[in-house]
Amino acid sequence: MTAPLRGWLTFALALLASLALTAPASPAWAEPDEQAPNETETPLLRDVLETTGRGYMQAKARLDQSKKREKTLASELQKAQEQLDLLTPQVAQIAAEAYRQGKVGTLAVLLNSTSPDSFVDRATRLDEISRLNNRKLSQLNAARDVAARAKAALDAEIVEQSKQVAIMAKQKKDAEKALALVGGMSVTGGGYVSATSPVAKAAPRTANGEWPNESCSQEDPTTSGCVTPRTLHAYKETKRAGFNRFVGCYRPGGPYEHPKGRACDWSLQKSGFSPWNTKDELTYGSNLAAFLVRNSDRLGIYYVIWNRQIWFPATGWKSYSGPSNHTDHVHMSLL
Image 1 (tube, rainbow, N blue to C red):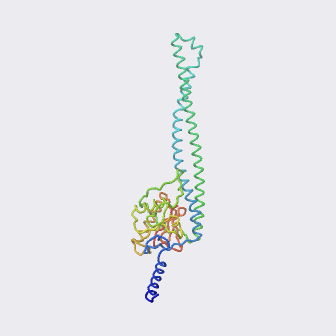
Image 2 (image 1 turned 90 degrees about the vertical axis):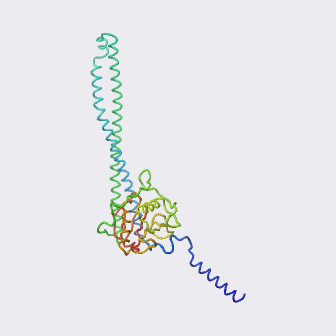
Image 3 (image 1 turned 30 degrees about the vertical axis):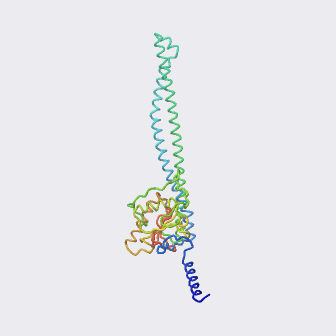
């Protein structure tokens, strides 16, 4: 092999090796200049989120559904009681009339009748009263049954609500204790909440009002990965609310719900991630966090982390001192 050919082969091999080292092993979750923020989590924080967070939100969903059933049952009970109030005097009046018409007996009717026609009229009247009384009595008994069932179901809902409230109180207490161990103290001023945030369209729930289990089945609009239908819905609603700066959702690895397609990082910049250093960037992140919190029940928000604070359904806003202080993006996780 000649020296020029040997030199060309050496150059070609070096170039191929350089390309192999720089090429990504798998599709990147974002463009090179839009790399994910440095996010890590502690096992203790993960335990707080998984055990107390899910339990609290499940109990809250059941409580909300029970309150809806209670309202329906209370309406049914009121209607049944109104029917009872209407039928009771009617039945009493018919019974009194039947007593007055029938107390003389059949023989007296025959003896006192001046003609066959008057006897038939009297007998027909008695029969009509009897049939009317039976019909009204049947309606009255049916109304009583409906009222009794509605009252029993209403009482059961009150018991169910007390149960769920107790579960939520325990989950809240456990969450606050656990968050305190990772630096989660109460936030002065209540964190980021705004009653003027746009209202999002509600994501679908199951027939009993709970959040359905979903797989990572939808194409992620921000990466080459996937997201759950609920995450995609929240992404679209947040965009529709006017938060249109850079965002990345799916990541193949790392903490939180990113690998499950249940989390998005909302940057403060039009491209990439960097900590806020202007009032505009701080306002954007704060407004976005407030929007997610206000619509948490509509979107199925699991928790939100922003600017050294974490919002948790069971606890509200708490200070956050995790490995990433989240000053460069708003983190959104969904159930």
